[in-house]
Length: 332
Image (tube, rainbow, N blue to C red):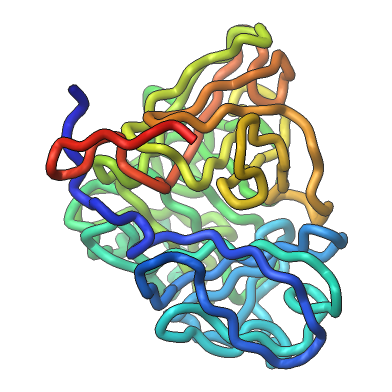
């Protein structure tokens, strides 16, 4: 039997929300049975070619960043305007609320229990800057954005390579992983700090940065890797829960980042993709089966299953495989 979860109700820390825009100011309530006040909301138009929009409570509700671009932080009073006790409020901006447009919002609550921390820091331009975090565990995923300048989103993933602190990916581009000193200073993060070098994306002097950090939590979140087999009966990836949200990226070659979730596809296969590095609308390709304890690739496409290629993933739970009372969940 699999290890019991530490979080019985993932909806307390992560939820997916689908909605249709109405072009007027509106408050949206999350659909889960448990109320959750989000600290980060990532919104994407499903029906139009608008940028991804990301807001968090540390920078302030109206401060937006665009994961598919290098733009510096902007203020948008027509975008997300407030975080509610169980949802969020929107203005009339087309990227988040054009009339009759369809949208998805991915919502996280910052919590040491759920292994998610949002950290704001100022750069000093000197390699070896250490930044404190509150995970009380070693981060498995770090995404850093220069709020002040037009630079890429730097990504550290603990399963990227055998020495992930020496390598970098960038969320807004399709590039393969590369051996770089400029981001993580070839220094592994610890349970209390992470280290950045002097690269523009992570540590320009007198500029401001935001970092999103996660650790793996049994039964709730997982940040790992897998190898493609080039077969339509593709690789199975064990997570220890039925995923609500999965992001994948080929690290050994040029390929888009891809996100699927449990709301845009409610039955298997899940194949409605959005690409963090593009402003494109929902696109149907690359089917995946979401299972009670992980996910299985169901295609031979290079973007997720090229034979011998390396991939990373991050996933969050809809339901733990085995709850704290030893009761297993069902496949969908």
